[in-house]
Length: 315
Image (tube, rainbow, N blue to C red; front, side, top):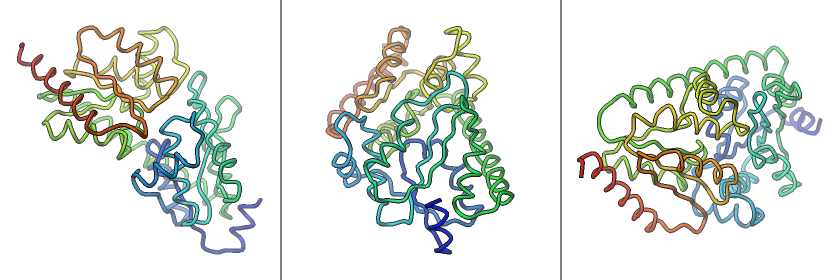
């Protein structure tokens, strides 16, 4: 009610979206939805030193680095928009849960910034809280009619599915191409973050090495690979995607890079599982935090690249 009353008294409203965590997964869906409704959106800039400092200052020490980055982006937005979009995605199916940091994100933001307005709705398959219903509530909170909101959501879903398919098709073609390739095993909010993952990607590209992303994989393949390898679904949705991606692409690449932010609980388990199972591929395990030295990272990447090239040449 607070959000709707706020909108009714202000014909123009600006929504802030943190450029972190699930934004990198649902970017097309969210931006197309608000665009279709004629709502102005401001997305925080790419992660930088200022945002990291803001996140570290306003977040508890025990939070993972990715969560601290998110809080930094929220902090940056607080005086630049009317409300911040913080939806809660809990799960998408049985045994397809997001990690507890993502599930509790709204509560973290709400308690860290009690005076800012938040635009929020829950998506929880287990409690019959569909994503469509969540976006209908968001539209209603912004003073939009049901039909208009439903049309905006339907259009956004179509654009989202099209972009996802295009990315998957492009990677399938890349996997079958020649040249040295590495599989980057990390969450999209790490691989697309300018501090966490883009430096790694830029290094390999500069070295002429092609990059595949384990999380870019068709959802039907994820289920197929999980049943074949483990006989059941993996509890954490994003880690199930990464494990399936490793199984699906491992024979198409020369090496595998595991990239996590400190201290991610699910990654600490599944990365160890991947390392133990892969005996014939070079594996580089990288852990990134706010104190990570770029020079040390580059040295490890250079050494790994030398290993890849030596293996390809039969040395």
